[in-house]
Length: 446
Image 1 (tube, rainbow, N blue to C red):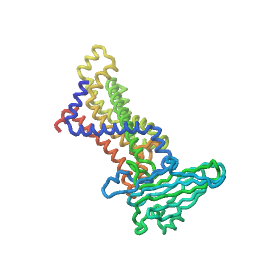
Image 2: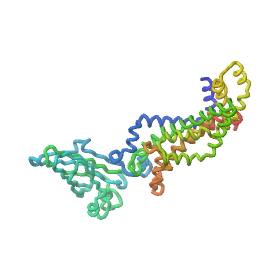
Image 3: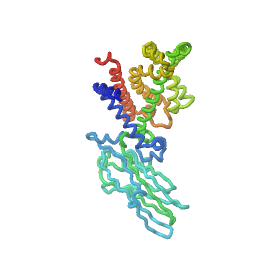
């Protein structure tokens, strides 16, 4: 414990170490928050759920915080649901088997520009006779626009933005523009309170209907959305624990195992050491990334399968030769001879006397290796070999690349995951360099 305190005391003398530790700690807390706030099953459901999960989100829009910038007032998504707010709906009987349901939506629109889309989602309950609805739009200056009528199925979506007949009645303007346009200047939105009146006829006593109005905005959430309306915040949050877990497990699996195998080879020598060196020399010339690509293409894209392959390929790496050179010096040390003289076993000498001597080299290498494997996982995902189930930073970048995000000006789609990758790598690199200076006296004055 005293040694750990002394290490941290020395480490905190370097400003770069303080900055790196702050970044790493922040990423760890970010990852813990993701796991607690969005459990794994919920994260997978939100990322892979489908239209029923994402239907209320706008498509490919930047984060809502862009509205904090001076002079920007983009529309945010407005959702109004009569099932959630029963006061919006009134019902009266017109005849024995004929009832009228009126749903009155009020939309307070105070934004610059126009919404992305306007859609009404209906849910109807009936036995045989399908309800019929008529929809009327009223602008703040009193103009009424008949949107259309519809005979409902149990679940129905009326996409106002796709109504070509309505577009003709709006002088050729897209419905999401024409409904909100200022009549004196159609390039500007008319601010104020809009109303949408849905009048439904029910032909059965037990029949009922509800409606949900969604006026899709031009910004969404804290991270924006992608081409499938998915909230990028889910992937950015869960990308942190996945990236850190992959990096830490790969670093532990490769470096610790490599060190132990190198120590075994040096201590036992002979054919064991020769076999380890020949395997290492063959493994060094194998193409690392192409092998991973082949595994992901022909066998499995599971992140855990790729992790096992990464560890197996990383065990017999060039690090074995570095550790072997150090262990050859340690093997000749007097305290090793003393341990052998009083009868210490082979494994005890390796674990208790040889390996601890290499810790000053191991710790900086371990910390510096974590971002290497974090970037490796992201690189595989960018190449289309990411886990199809998990939301990761590399997967977000791959989707952005496949859909021309940069060409279409959707910079947020690329910059956010790329920025998190860079910050993570930068934090670990700062800590690794500082640890190297702490454990290597020749670098302390550099």
